[in-house]
Amino acid sequence: MARIPRGLDYLTTIRSDQYIEISAELLGQGMERFAEMVNLVGAPLKPPIGNTDTIMERMVDGEPEQEIPTRLVAFANVSAAPIKLKGAGQLAGYYDLYATLSPTKESTGQVVFHSADDETGTFESSSVFWPLFELRPLGGGESIFVDTGEVPVPGFPMNIGSAGGHWTLRPPMVNAVRSFKAKPVFYTGEIIITVKRGNQDAPVPMVGGENLVPFAGGPGDLAACAKMQAEFTSPGNPGHLARIDFPSTKDFANLELL
Image (cartoon, rainbow, N blue to C red; front, side, top):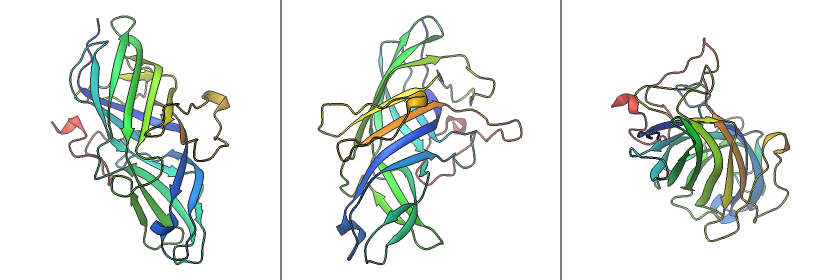
């Protein structure tokens, strides 16, 4: 039976649709409430590790069928198109919206791997997600930061989870992001994420593959996300397995340093 070592899993975002609500009070005098479904795409980490935009740490050695604690140590998405803040206040205008990890609250969870043989199987995972939103004004100027770990934001923290995804101990592609010291588990196919509100029992599902579409609803529909195994994008852009120069990457996130 396969043994699951402590290590890091490297993922890239295919598509993410996220409902985001920011109160008028938080934006200042004269501003209107922002409440929209925002389409996000992956923003590769810097220095790059291929097209990786998400890193999850498996925090202990484990076995199949055992609950293994996890935490997100890197996350980087950006809005596919600028968002617009409306109102008569000073902050009115267009912004690129970046989503990273809260510096004040850990996004922790757990994963259970089910073994089909010594090297493959399926998994299910769940996590609490605390993001930091940065709104960068087009044309320059000071960013607006909203840390959901400090400021109450509707829908956060998010309870995210996935089930039925496939894993393997062998790289599923020639350019799969890997490292001997990081001991990654690799993922094959799409990882479908479902989301539910903090005290809401009913999950909000997404539709994967070619049918992946933004939700048409409002506050009840929180998010949709699909991820895949990260890979080095080309021989000329191999990425660097070193400390990730990204503002909200957690300390000691990369086992290359150990």
